Length: 550
Image (tube, rainbow, N blue to C red; front, side):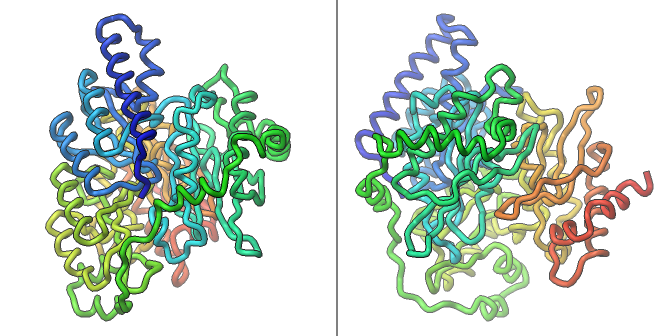
């Protein structure tokens, strides 16, 4: 895990001092709302429906137990005793007071954390695979590259006021668990025929009002040119991106307008003169950053047969092993997902008490480190297989052993109208209705892998476009309704869902979901997932089942 040096610490501390002064000047009436707006946004501070919201950076989803305890303490003293994990692997406080936000930021510096560039028209938190460094199918560890991008992009003066927010994701495994195809820039790290690291670069992906899948603009890029090439992409976007209409300001609109080929040509023209300039990435710098991401002190262990382990324990433990325990690159170890999706809990929320307990468990079972996934869950990356049952018992007590990772109730869900001023409809109550309707764990396991994503508005913070079932909150003459779509997916085989038809009231949505599931059960072939069936038969059978009795 990356550790700040004196330079990093000074930057963050200076930023906090500046924001202390900026906030006080705003409170004293010396800065207008418009003047304060960009200042607070680039320090992660929003004004939500009922209170400010502070978004805290968790770079590429890595957090240690000390940091988690600090977040727990802050949530108790400055908020309402809980936190919310987001789809960008960050954390949000939903109820801080404006006056105390600079104090929160100051406390974060003591554990090498900040909120810089978690909002605003700048390069946001770079995200990656939650199993980075331990994944059984990993080709290249993406974490050093995420850290290099973070250091390059943080407070970069040329990219602090882009046409719109800008998101980068990096994947280095056979399976893409970082949704790279729907990012402004997606980076696929791989090895060439000689075993050397290379990057495939995609641009123009994104969700929101106009969802698009990214296009490949560079098939193979050498590591030393990564930053200069990203620099060129951002410069082309900065020059040609729309600034007159925020709905057309994302890079995806520019790539489509120019065509991916022309956009790639413009990037190449911008890149060639600077590829060997100061943006050239020296091998010693790559090695320096990579040195922070060494393996922990693994023991030499024999692998445990998890099938035998399951048979020796209860059914709930067996189901948890099946869904929440993942293959690891090291014999005798597994990665474990804590799904923050128990019935009646807001998806992605964790209490201060849970955070403290999770930190203790991380120290005991996973070298004191955790990961945040873009599915709004937490991960212990390095658990000895012989300790899995013991860990499960502890998680059961905390209500964090729900065996539903990757199933229907492990849904992505934005805060929606309960918090966000942009939302057309509430997301959390709908999520709870669906959780209660389908909480039978045997039914969930029979249905199998299924991504259900909920967004409260077209900004798509809940990634509804790439849910196998996507739900979008819409406004119909002042009333909350929900539009349903099916067939979306993230990963290397990304697809965008197709809208079924007219929207539904909240109380109707669980029945609609049930009709979709029954259609799947009727039509599926052996070992066929929901998304596979949907792609094979198309949306019409699902549409017919939903609207047949209407």
